[in-house]
Amino acid sequence: MRRRATGLICNPTAVDARLRHAADLLHALPGVRLRALFGPEHGVRGDAQYMAAVDGGRDARTGLPVHSLYGAAAASLAPTAAQLRGLDVLCFDIQDVGSRYYTYQATMLLCMEAAARAGVGFVVLDRPNPIGGLLVEGPRLRPGFESFCGLHDLAPRHGMTVGELALLFREERGLDLDLTVVWCDGWRRGQGARAAGLPWVHPSPNMPTPETALVYPGTCLLEGTNLSEGRGTTRPFELLGAPWLDAHRLAAALAAERLPGVAFRPASFVPTWDKHAGVRCHGVELHVLDAAAFRPFRTGLACVLHARAQAPRAFRWRTEPYEFVEDVPAFDLLCGSARERQGIEAGATLAELARPWPAEERAFGRRRAPHLGYPG
Image (cartoon, rainbow, N blue to C red; front, side):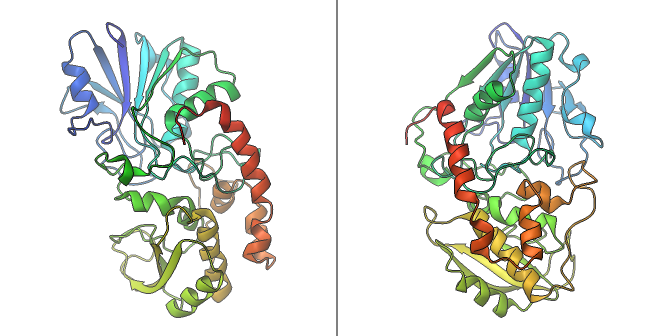
C-alpha cells in the first residue's frame, strides 16, 4: 500500500498486538496515503446495534471521510464507483467469527466485486479464525436463498479465515481482481482465539467473547424465530428461551440428544432489550465442555426443534424482513434452504434433519481445500 491511495475497510477489531487501530497507524504512517474509511455493519468504531443503519460522515480521530457499508437499503452494502474514485487499493482489516451468517465476510465479498469493477486492488490483512480452522459444519446454501447473511455457498461453520475466503471468492465468483493476502505469522488451524494469544476485541456489540463466537453458528438460528437468543443479557447466544417455555423440560430434552461437547443448564433471564424485553424468559444456558467435540449448528437446530415441540402454539418463525430480504423466512435464509424448517414442521427428529449434512460438509471441504493457507 506504500505510496498508493488507500481506502480502509475496518471496525474496532482492526488493531495490532498493542491495541492500536489500523486507521490511526496508517493515517500517521509516512508513505501511505489513507484517503477514506469504509465501515461495515455496526460501523467503523463499532457502536451501532445489529441490523441498525449506520451513517457516514467523518471519523473523529483521523478526520477522514467515512463511507457506510450498512445503510437503510441493500444498495448501501457495497461501495459505489464514486466512493472508489481516486483510490488505488482497498484494504480489508476486520476480525471475522467463522460463520456464514456473520456479515463481515459478505461485506468483503461485495467490496471485492466493486473493486474488480473499478480496477482497484484489494488487500486482506488476515486474522485467525477465532473458533479454529479444522471443522466444517452444516448445510449448503442453495440458489434462491442468498442474503446478506449468506451471499455465497459456504458451510455455516466454514473453518476459514477471511484471507482464505477472499481467495475462494475470487475464484468461484470469477473476479478479475488484483488480490493480496497478508497472512498471519504462526497461526495453526487447530487454534482458537484463546490459543492464538491475541487480544480479543468484540467485533460486534453482541459478540463479547470467543466463547460467544463458538456457539454462534448454531444459536444464531434463533434469530429466525420468536425465541430470545439472549440479546439484552450478558451472555448473548449462550442463553436462549422464551416466556412460555419450561426450562427444566427443555434442558432435559436437549440432554437426551447426547450432543457432543455441551451441557444445558435450565435458566431464566430478563432481556433488557430486543425480543421479550423486560419479560422473564425460561430456557437454557449452553455450557461448552469440549470445544473440539462441540458441534454448534447441530446444537442450535436442536434448541429450535425442542423449543417448538414444547410449545408449538406460542412458537413462530420470523416473518418480518431480515437482512433486506422480505419474501423468504429468516430461518430459511440462515439454514440456506427451506429444508430444515419444513422438516421441523413435519415432525422430523434431529438425526433425520442432520442426515444430508455430512455429504454437503464434505463437498464444501473439497471446495475450500485449494485456498487454505495455514497448516493444521
